[in-house]
Image 1 (cartoon, rainbow, N blue to C red):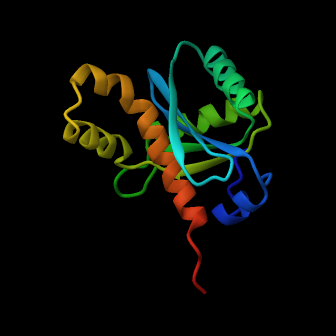
Image 2: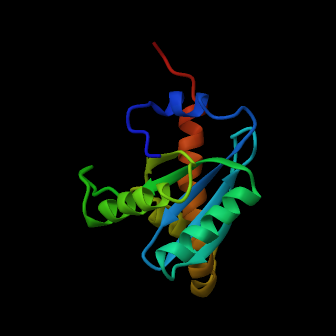
Length: 159
C-alpha cells in the first residue's frame, strides 16, 4: 500500500514497535536490498536480486521480507534533479502498484537522488575494484536510501 497521505513520522509510528524495515534500490537489472535493525537505527546492506520477471522478482522480495519479519518497505524514488518524476519514477510506482496485489506490506518512497553516485564515490575512495563495486553498489545504495529514511524519522521535529 502506497500511503501518500501520511507523513514519514505517522508512517513510522503506525508500524509495530520492534520491526525491521527493508530498503529497496529498484533498478532495471537488479534490486538492491537493505535491512534495518529492529530498533530502526541502522541500515545494513542485505543482497542484490537479479531481475528476471516481475512475478519472480516480487516472490524473491516477499520471501526475504517474510524471512526477516519486515514491517514495511522503503523504496527509493528516482526523481529528476529538479524534483519532477520521469520515466524511472513512473516505473518504480508501477512496480509498487503491482507488488501491492501480492503483499500487504506498507510502502513509503524515499527520494534517492544521487544515492548511487554517493555510494560509488565512497567505494572508489575505499579503493574498491570496479568488479567489486558492481557487486556492492545496489545493496549499498539500498542501505543509503533506508538510512536516509531512518535518520529522518529519528530526528526530533521542531515546532
